[in-house]
Image 1 (cartoon, one colour):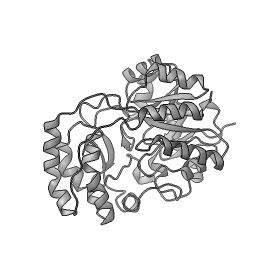
Image 2 (tube, one colour):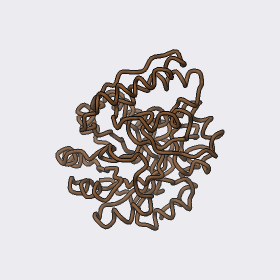
Image 3 (cartoon, rainbow, N blue to C red):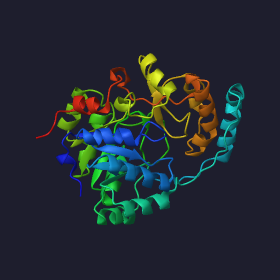
Length: 341
């Protein structure tokens, strides 16, 4: 099993699905002594197999694969219809149509089978806790299992399911909240240092700290609060190895002074990004329905990227956006934390 406390550098690259996370980025982090991640979200099981094989050809070191746990709730069809109707003028303006509100399990069963066969060093889960049977099967192959949690209750559930470690995600983190249940106010949650204290009261598992990790001071504070490693995402978005799209890259520099906010506007799940017109105008009426809203807005987002129009694109970023700058991934790893040992 992978000992997270034994990483040469206690830095984990967040698994950024949808483009920013690449094999090249994960390889650069691994080569620098940190833990690189491949994002299985939105990808097929076959694509995950290919990326794992490619990463193993590039580097010899610990890495992880992140998987989305399928949504268990059924959305309100009327709410989805209303949101589709609200977004039709946006789609028409961009020369496209709104998407269909389809669900799906993100190839869950096939990905579990693939990861059991691949025997990767670490698998993490987001949007829920996998069944104890899945956790146990992965651990039996030698894979370390990590579950993303946003509250003490979730930490308790993940511990009972047999997770080896937990990724405690503070409300400051960019992109999607990893919460088990997609309910309540989009901006609800504890800040990272508070969450670390809360989670430690219910579990003895190793903790990875995620949220607002952009400087060495941030990492040191989280490690002092009991984490064995820190996870950063926004800090890697401007790296040349990342797959961040040009519109997103430009916004991270040109709009770094704008606030970030958690909203369901683009995907139906709370996700933190730079405030733009789309968020301002539509967040209040976006239903709690993932991946249905994600599918509704996908054609709009793609058309906006092609224009380009940053006002209709999800510009994921955490609250420490102002400290992010363009530099190689190796420099991010080095600057976030001193080497161990």
